Length: 381
Image 1 (cartoon, rainbow, N blue to C red):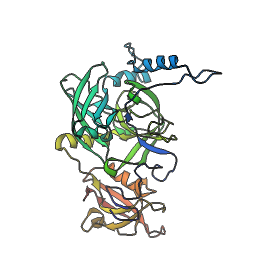
Image 2: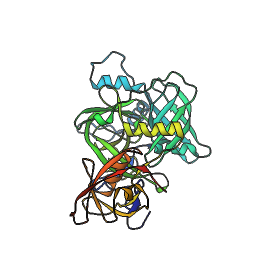
Image 3: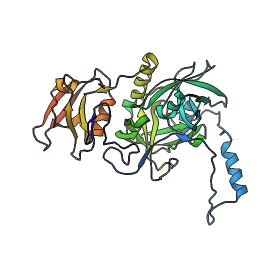
Image 4: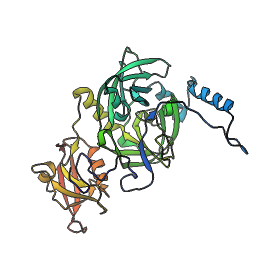
């Protein structure tokens, strides 16, 4: 990585803070990963004309929140929120990771009947620590030990395996390329440890570039599905499904006006598209590692220019072979507009090694527009 906000494409340079204050070029709220520290869950009763609550009333609420929620078994109307919830609930699990430093929780979606579960790396990464213990709570109320299979920080995707099971219900995988802005969606997970929680909303935007600090200062960049379905700490790694119950995204990041780690939803949640999550999970299961697609050129993530400013180009790399030059300003990837360095990184990471993309580039003054074809290769160290 270079100084001054330049970072190798496929990674993010100094221009992205560990706790980002915006989404791409948008400075709207504090971003945070949507996992949760485990502790007591309490609530304050507020009624018309009255605020606050008595200690006895608080205790009643705390006890109620610690009880598992009930679900109905009657078939729901096809295409309804209730039907989507019924289809997905048995395929979404609650994950708890305990280490000598503390306990955190998140969610996951079942990939196979014998226990493979898709989740976020930031949910289960601590399970690799000495003395760590990971457990999974199923929708039927049973708890099982689990082991870490593999994970990838830059994409924030991981796979774990639940022990001693052979009859789990895999979630139905959808196609995120067919998702539309405005369509209804349902989020399923365990916010604040409240298992089997269902919220609903719509797809607010697609291809939203989101950057947030990851493990060891390594930034995660997501080409996200934005939703107003309530996503809170503990939803990370769970399911964003369509009204048929098909997984279309993995909730991972929320924007919040709150300053604390446990600040709640303000209707700005972000999910990793399932097509990207599935590709990465398959690589993790088959190979234990991931090849990140890249053009292998340094991108200025601090530039205020209306595009992605190119710095150094790796000799012999994909960008150089395609004709990209230092000082070029990338303004489109295929038919998709690019207005920042983070937007370019997100667009490239949403593709696969070997894909060919058409970049529209200009000089820094917006002149000399041309197009070049670049075949993506694995990110170089």
